Length: 112
Image 1 (cartoon, one colour):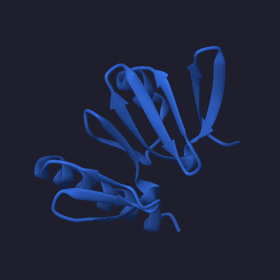
Image 2 (cartoon, helix red, strand yellow):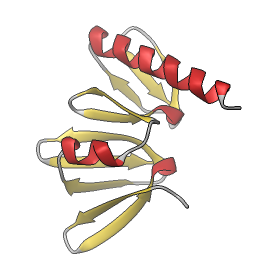
Image 3 (cartoon, one colour):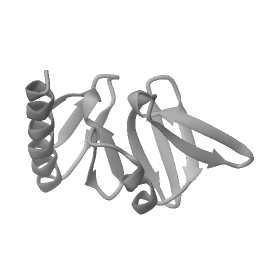
Image 4 (cartoon, one colour):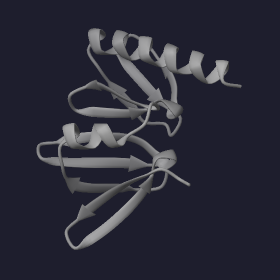
């Protein structure tokens, strides 16, 4: 069974598959979910969303949640995603992200 994030936006309800979520960003009280095909936004809090997600997601900064399956590379201040978008972080957040990403990849390789 596919894991999904169930969200409500106005009178609409959406089930967004985890596998399609590239990243999420916070804009005041709204959460914008960037997927492989579109964007969805809804009112929400990360502290309510994070417990619903699995180990492929990381919250390196208070404004972002990244799906590590879509990370294609990192440099000094930027995480690049397979979809072509880039997310900028301070050096401290990026170092934390690199460590989590390295551990995630090591676990994935060990489970093969």
